[in-house]
Every structure is written in structure tokens, then in C-alpha cells.
Image (cartoon, rainbow, N blue to C red; front, side, top):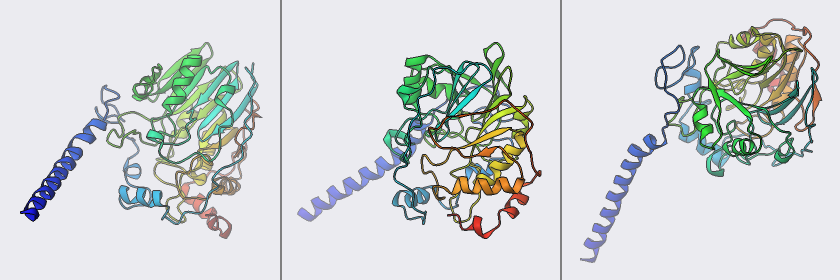
Length: 392
């Protein structure tokens, strides 16, 4: 009697769990899906989701192969052979000037893809993230380097560029604080205005090739790159990803690559066609998921970043998207060391890694030393050296 009752209880529990799992699998993905944008189909939108016109195969698969669950399990348990990283990096935050007038341009790397650009009396901020973790609910990779400018020390922000909706680029809390304090103009790509709007902030959402006027002589063009978007996995590619060109009246333009893979490698020239690029921000980190990997579909490594700098024709570029959050397996200082080697391969100039929180001046555009035009294969052959191979 007791055994039969126990078995009945256990059977009920098992059945309940089966029903719960079934409901979870059926309901939760739909609940987590979001419709951020509705519009006509285009060369990168099928009427429901966006896509890369140069192909999505490299952004759909896991960077190192295998299952997504296995990838996250190895990452969380640190059972992936990754080299050690510092738990914290010393940063001395700076206190920027209220304004920088005229052609003078002062740049301060706040960390990750967050950069403060001050010029023409404008304060421009890219992908502002002040969260301690790059993920939802306080989860995800933890910040190892504090912001190079404390939030309270930010000058009044006039323009914010938001490249896409991943948590390490669209920090809702930071955007809400900025909106409540400064009411900046926020420019993003299609669909991300819905995510930003959840904070109470208002954003201008544009398609690739469209522009927004900021004031006479200053405009923001939304330009193509190669990536993907999601907040909850099931809402994949419901919103668009992009790079940006800030068109300025004199001294040359500003380019922000956002978060990107190399793709067909033609999109940098599309941005350069809008005018000479005085200053560019190009990612170099989160590219290695297996030993020796030099790039992933969604993220360029230093090798391809150097080619992007060259194809932009940028006079000055700064490396971003490294050294703040650990998103992949390369060593902490592998990206800047590899970038220096890649720049030696091209023979070009002007693309360096900078320190978080240390402001620097960017001179007006002058024709850069472009170096030798290279294809991806040429760059990889050039970097096939014992010194580069030894970088973790």
C-alpha cells in the first residue's frame, strides 16, 4: 500500500515535470521572441527577420563548432583551456572638458565599444555600457576594467550611437540614465528603437544607407557591417545591426564599426565613399574560441581589423571591443599585440590600441600611409610566425 502510494506520487511528479518541460519548450521561446520591427522586405530583411546580404552561415554556427549548450557549459565551468585573465585592471578615470569647439577632436575610450568623441561643440557617445556584467539579470561576463569616464563625469551628451541590441552594446540602464539627464539624440538601426524605448528613451531608427541630420553640417549615416542581433536567442535578427559614419563639416568624418565580422570585406569602402575618415573605431577582440583561431563570423580579430582600417582609408583608428569584458578565449593582451604585428604586415600607419580613460587628440584628416593592399589570405600568411603563434 505504501509502496503503491509512493509510486503514484512519484509518477505524478514525473508527469508534472514532463508537462512543465513541454509547456516551457512550447511557450517560453514564443514568449521571449519579440517583434521589434515591421516593414517591407528588402535586400537584408525578409519581412520578419534581418540577414546579412553577404551570407549568414558564419554568424549562425557556433564560433568553435559543437552545441550552444556545450559552449556555454564549458565557458561557465572554465573548462575550455582558456589562458588566465586579470580579475581587475587598474583604470584612472578622466574628467572630460564640457565641450571641445571647432575642428579640434578629443577622444576618450571608456571601455569595450564605449567611446566619447568631442568635436565641433558636440559630445558623441558610442554604445554606452556601464553595467558590471554584459548580460541580462546581472549575469554574463564581468567587467574587469572600470569605465574610463565615470557616468557622473560625462559631459552633457548630444548624440548617442547604438549599433545593435546585444547586451554588451545596448545597456538599457545606461541609456535610461542618459535620457533622463541629457535627452540626447539617439541614432540606431531598425528595430533597436523598440528595445531602447522600453527605458522611456526615444531613438531614431534608420536602415542601412539612410541618414539623420543632427544640425547644419552634421549628419549620421547608418552603414552596413556583418553581424546579428538578439536579446533572448529566440528574437534573433528581429532588429538590425549597423556601423555609422558621422559626417562633419570639416576635418574629416568619424566611423564607428559597432560589432562586426569581416563578411565580404566590401562594407568599409561603402562607409569611406561618404567622405574621408579622420577617425575610426574598429573592434579587435572576442575573436578566438579555439587555439589559433584568427577570427569568428561575428567578430573580426586584429588581422581583419587591420584590413578594415586600410579599406576605410582612415587617417587614425583606435582599437575597441577588447580588454573590458572577457567574451572569448584569447589572452588579455593578445589583441593589441597581434594588431601591432598586423599593421607591420600592411606597412600602413595610424591604427593603435589605446588605454582606457586616457584622452588624446586626433588631428584633422590627412592622407594616411595606406601600405600594401592585402587580402585575408595574404594577411594570414604574413602572421604565420612563431611570435604570433605564441600569443595565447
